[in-house]
Image (cartoon, rainbow over all chains, first blue to last red; front, side, top):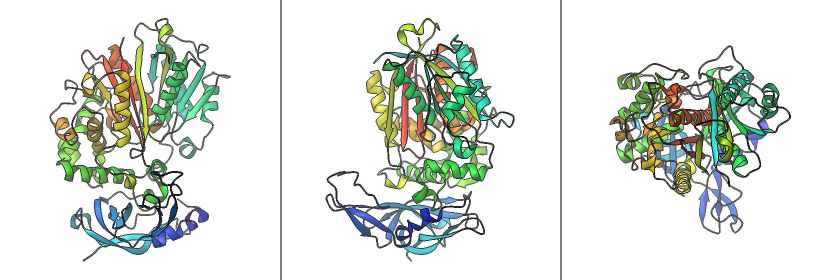
Length: 133
Length: 388
């Protein structure tokens, strides 16, 4: 699918730097960013939160039937990662096959091409993760 | 709130309908429901239609008006309702609310999806919109992938096996083989499921529901006049809906759907019933792991025991609760917006002991439960129905 330039441009800080938010009121960290803290709602106060990109794998799968834009990468490992600051996010694990991944493995973020639109479309960059040796 | 009954039901065959468009399917299901309720159409006061993605699948929005026009129902109000794969149940719930509140007497509810006008890749991309487009799908997740993440965790935490998941598909195909409306009317074996093509480990193609065209419709009326139209009105004992985070990663637990748990609890409280009272249930088996989690979240089995219960036949036609007698999403097919309404159609047939369920009738079915999920669990709807 060809995607909107503005839609992708506005997410660059979050995708490139793993930039989220934290609620100063209840001390909960969020990724992706939220404008309202779901726990505190009007009483919450949100601030930017920079994540370090370190975490552990909570669950994972190996995708054999890829969506459009990911054909060249399949099969690839997709995981839920618990960041050390708290939030869980969805990301690819690079340079590895599913049989070599375990729940609980330590991972760190890397900057990669996420997907490509049609041959003459956008190339999207952002975070993926790799196992910490 | 007034008591509300289903007085007529109808559906198209589910499958790949190259020769039928969106509007033809809706009209076919609608006319069958009207026939079933002995109505001509002028009795209808309002309608609700569930469809997830007509705008992207066939480029058509303004579905309510289209259907009012092609069903010959102008000028009554018809409203489109969307909640991803739960769109049909949401429409049913809107219809229920409209009658229960006293705003309308006779209401038609439809569900429809026309999915095979596009290729598999485009359809998968569109269905991805049921999840978090920017933070799941964009990063390489797929719907089988999201349910695979749940399955992996369910396997680790409770010892669920691929064989247990496969057993759900085998059972549902066994039921679907007796359903002339089902997309797949063939039986399959556990071995076939286990050997089928890997999609997202541990889910294989035979763990996944298909891409389907189809429509379903039901007619609702208040209890006090329902008997005018049918000898066997099906009473809606409870209607409950709950929400959860759009993305799987924002949830505490992956091994159950909180929205299902909350909606089920509310529905059982309203109906003053318990899970053991349910004879027949249509649950949302978009993937086999989803059925195992559903029968746990609905309270039929303890958390972690859904897999073994399925493998042991406890959800078969003669089990403690007959689950997915229609064949479920897996075998009957999953035209997403139609699924929630089809569940009601199947339950109505079961609770009436209708000839439509020959070969897959749950003996003495009195109470039925419908469970419909949107996306990876961000919406869940539970309805409890009672036969006359």
